[in-house]
Length: 226
Image 1 (cartoon, rainbow, N blue to C red):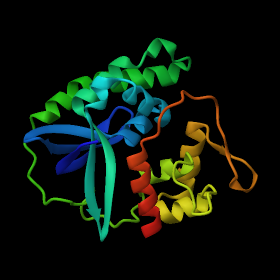
Image 2 (spheres, rainbow, N blue to C red; image 1 turned 30 degrees about the vertical axis):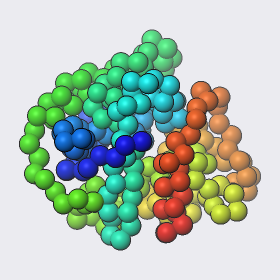
Image 3 (cartoon, rainbow, N blue to C red; image 1 turned 120 degrees about the vertical axis):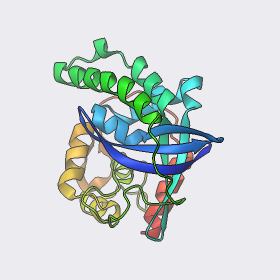
């Protein structure tokens, strides 16, 4: 997966909650993108299903980029989906198949907002920021929001403890900086229920996919650093 150079990032308010949007340089051209994990969160959409949707499409895969930032002394790499990929993925989501009326309306509202707003943001002129800056400048690592991408990967079992076990909610809070109440809420939202002694996850059937090994390795390295 190719890398993109971060120019600036900020939270943008969408109809379904705040969404980090980054202006990036890709092969000398400017574009905007959003973290894939946070996109799934604001859509209330399963991250594995969304990632699978992107990975199965050869065109959408071309708009995945790795954005590397520096938070304190810790280098962090995160998968972003550029604007054309976001709009393409949203267009491929069939809202008619979403049984829950509230969830269906949530996705429709976000689709309408994204198709208008992401194109407009592309033509804004953000001030260039230093390379490898934090996604949220001026905030300490253990800010209330924490590293949700890392927390989601640990909840899903994609990043595990050195002995192969799942991390407990307490460990996820300590390592990701995401409050335990938020970690539990994210787990319930995605249907990830831990069995006794955290040996495995009980979850509803999901569309199988090939994991993003590069991202998982980076997240695993990040946990070891912490």
